[in-house]
Amino acid sequence: MAILNGTELKVYSGTGSQTNLVAFAQNCTLTVNQSVREITNKESAGFKEILEGLRDFTIDVDGAYAWSNGSNSPISDGADDLIDTNVLTNRQPVSFTFGDNQTTGDNNYTGSGFITSMSLTGGTEDTATYSFTIEGTGILDRVEV
Image (cartoon, rainbow, N blue to C red; front, side, top):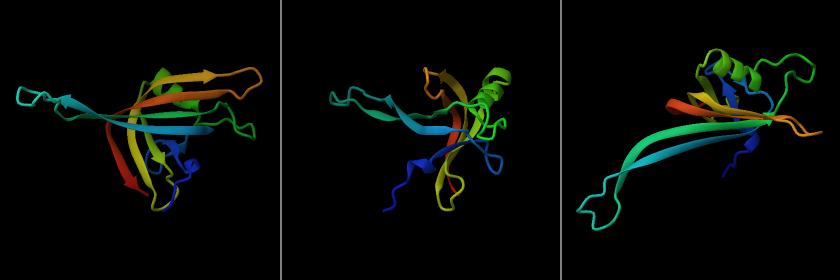
């Protein structure tokens, strides 16, 4: 049985061949929820009955906060860029790929969503960090690379 190395899970903005790895990300989480709807009635013998309802998903990303890469060149795929493009300026959804889009045979999840929250944190003499949440809209697809 092959166990996946967590380092292989990455979040890319964009889809297809136009993807950019979210810069300096350290952790990422994909959460998928299935809500239910209650259908309990007088014939349920006092037990709750349910059926399927809506599905939803979120992606949470956090990492080291930076404006430039190691050679002091500006980065174009950092947390600032996603916030500027998808919240402050255009209020557009983010297209994303969750997984490792570099390894043949791996599964990825693709979709789009809106950045619903972002935080920047800087402690004294500590690494500045960012975190943001993408709330999905529409279908979450699983695709094999």
